[in-house]
Amino acid sequence: MCTALPIGEYAAVALLLWFGIRSIKSAWDLPSEIAGTQDEASELAEAEEFLKKTEVIMLSPCANELSLLFCESLTKPET
Image (cartoon, rainbow, N blue to C red; front, top):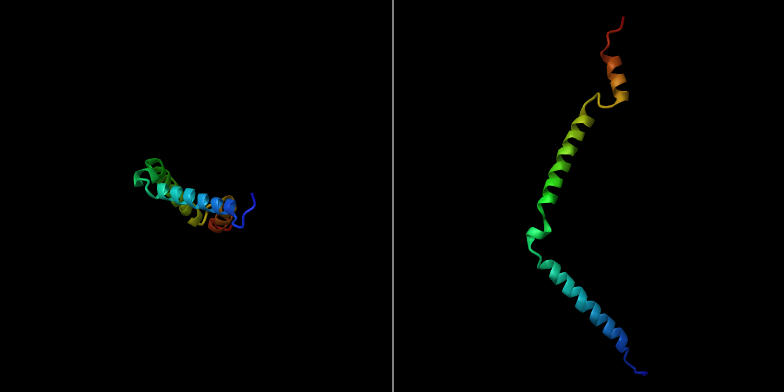
């Protein structure tokens, strides 16, 4: 069937809009308890604690092996 209107393309766009808006609406209507679970909160706290520990290690002047050698040579009295 040959028509002047591209009915297939209009149908495709209409269905894309219908299902796209429907999925966005269903995601929007999710309760906030499902969006942020307790596991995510504990994982976030664990990651923040790890970063704080890493920050302390990185800020200390004798953090790694090379700086240990350097700090050791600075603190040893020369004889």
